[in-house]
Amino acid sequence: MRLGIYGGTFDPPHKGHSTAATAAIQELKLDKLLIIPAAQPPHKKLPVDEPGADMRFKLTRLAMNDVDKAIVSNIEIARGGRSYTVDTVQKIAEKYPDADLYLLMGTDMLFSFESWKDFRKIMEKTTLAVFSRRDGEYEKLVWFAGEIARKYGAEVKVIPNDAIEVSSTDLRGLLKLRRGREYLEDSVYGEIIKYRLYGAKPEFQWLREKAYAMLKPSRIPHVQGCEMEARFLARRWGEDPDRAGEAAILHDVTKKENLDVQLRLCKKYGIIPDNMEQGDTKLLHSITGAAVARYEFGCDDDICSAIRWHTTGRTGMTLLEKIIYLADYIEPTRDFPGVEELRKISYTDIDDALEMGFSMSLDEMKREGITPHVNTFEALEWIRDIKKDKD
Image (cartoon, rainbow, N blue to C red):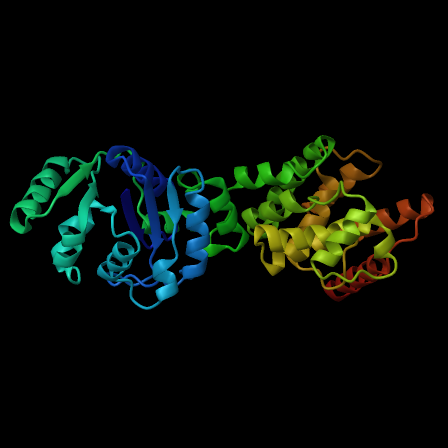
């Protein structure tokens, strides 16, 4: 059996890793390739925001899911401590005594190979297989591989690799800037955003795709309009437009769900609705939507709170909460008596607009015979008190 060993921190695992794994399997005609995330690499410190070995293992399994003949192993994570390759190779050689072992590594790793712990023992048990890069170092790599082979009587193979090159360090930086998704499998990116690993912020096109898939098609224009309006209002009143955009995109993600589904979501996320909320899907969707934003998309407290209160409002509303409440009310697809006046006031005095919005909402429910939630009454009294204090 021809068995490959491909170790690394995989922090995070990206398409460059999976493409390299596929290239190695094909070039070396491997029967199996063990992908081995390190517990603690001996040659470098892990970043402060590193998500932990178990999470890197999970992400690596997702990243390699479609790589035929690849198996992600936790051998180094289970062993714990510093992950020395010689120890891993020894264990694999004992488990597969008749296998031809190929140790995969990047160009930089080969150049530093002689500094590895017990590197001669590694060469005794494996054939070194190094990935070439596309940056013009191929000739240098072939020469150095030849020198290693000559000097130690080892075998070194060079694997042509056309993978898109991105360093994990650079990728972690891109994720903080809402970039870098193209380097990751969608399942990996989704987990990173869900837990906001590496300080990641979601790319907006990805977030829209995920949110819109959870909506009725007829609801999408409203959400698009709400995002646009929220960004405009945020710029006008000094809030972060991107944070307003996140809240607006996700504010209606559970809107289409019926009462049974809403209540199941409450149970799933540990929500205890009050007597009025538990029988009203309109009230529940803002509560469950906030929970989905938090637990499925990793949104922070402020964004989740803006989603939570976009239907009723509340006393003590933050600027972001005010913006999402009004954006939902006045976005361009809305058409009802008084909306043009409300739109104008929203850009001249946000508290006046909020008072007007609460009053209009209460009047509409009265006309329709709907009992308003007490939160809206209290919010209206609160904003009126705020305005009195201003005067």
